[in-house]
Structures are given as C-alpha cells and as structure tokens.
Image 1: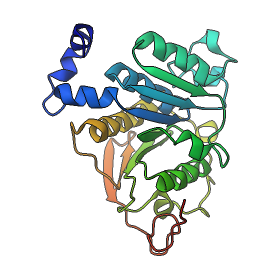
Image 2: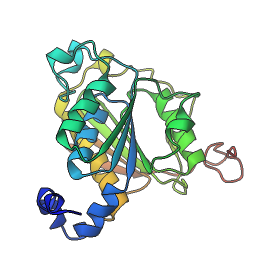
Image 3: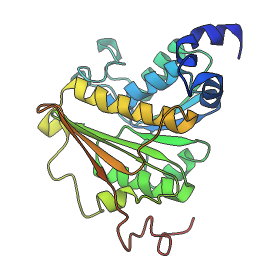
Image 4: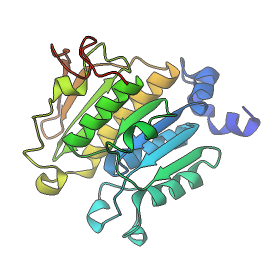
Length: 253
C-alpha cells in the first residue's frame, strides 16, 4: 500500500478490526454484482469507494427515466444506455486503482456458472424471485457466499448465505413454487431511501465477510418496515429434503 492509499483510506484504517489487514484483504477481493439497479448500483459505489480490488457487473437492462429516483448512479443523459456501461464509467472515475468488468447480459442458466468462476462473493441486486433462485443454486455449486437484498414500497429485507449453506439456502426460505405473485417495484412502488438502506446493509455484510471487521449474521433474515419503523430478525432453518443445500441430495457440479 502506497502513501496515496494510506491517505485515501485513512479514516477506515482507523476502525478497530479493519485496519491495514482489512484494507489489503479488500484490495485482493473480487465481488460479482448481479443487477445494477437501485440495490446493485449503490452497493457497487460503496464497495468501489472502500477499495475493493475488482467488481464484476452483470445486467442486461438499459436506463429508463423511471429508474432515476432510486438509481442515483445514473442521470438524465444516461437514459437509453446499458446500466453496466454507465456504472463501470462512474466507478472507474471514483477509484482508478480498481478493476471493473461489465457484462450487458442476463445472469441465467447459460451464463451463471461462468460469471462466478473468479469471484469471492456475490451481491444480489436483482428484483425477482427466479433470478435469486439461480444465484442460490449456482453459488451453492461454486461454494460462494452471497448477499441477498429486496425492497418494495416502504419495506426491505436482507439475508447473507455462506458458501457451504450450513444455515440453509434461499430455496429453503422461498421454494421454487413460490413466485412473485404480488409484483415488484413497477407494480407496487418503492421509495428510493428504502432501497438505499437495504443496499448499505448488504455492503456492510460484504465488508465484514471479506475483512473480518464485523460479525455477519449468516442465515438471519432481517426485515425492515420503514413505515412503522420496526425491524425483525428471523433465523433461517434448512428445509429437510432441499435439493440445493441438503448434503445428501444437492446436485454435484
């Protein structure tokens, strides 16, 4: 770490448990962000600012006017461009020392495992159940931790999964037959700060996992009702017979 890095990260280097070792661990890490909307774009910005070594961005969508109230990495001039392209430019301007790789494709059956091949963790910035099921299944196969976040209207939730899924998996929490029957933000609405709060909780979990600066509440579903200003924490339980995380049933790579 050079003098410029010491000055740049001086405030977080002072945090007990983070310090120089944490900064070096962060600089050596690579994180995949699936979805570069409200959750993913903000998480990417904070990870870049903190000094992550590499970010891999995946999103097939283009920027729309209705994105701007909550996806604050983007401006009116960006409308019509791919989110990953614009976000990669923003991140490069924020921190020129990091590596940013971007793919304007969907995370799906054909691309998923390849995108996970050289990363240390995954941040979920998607907005649908089916995408999270894929992330869950492929990260189990790759033994990678992932950090889920969701937000709608004035409510949000987070949960962090270990690579080995001893605590259970997303399929245990929300099986495949449970769909997005109630719709997402486009149907139900969302306030931008709700998305931001959930994204920042994801970032704190990632920083804790990569550097040891804090304790990650693995397998604890944290739910936030920002209208009533209440929170709840519910421990996940592995579902008997789960084909994804049950060691006797899960599909080998």
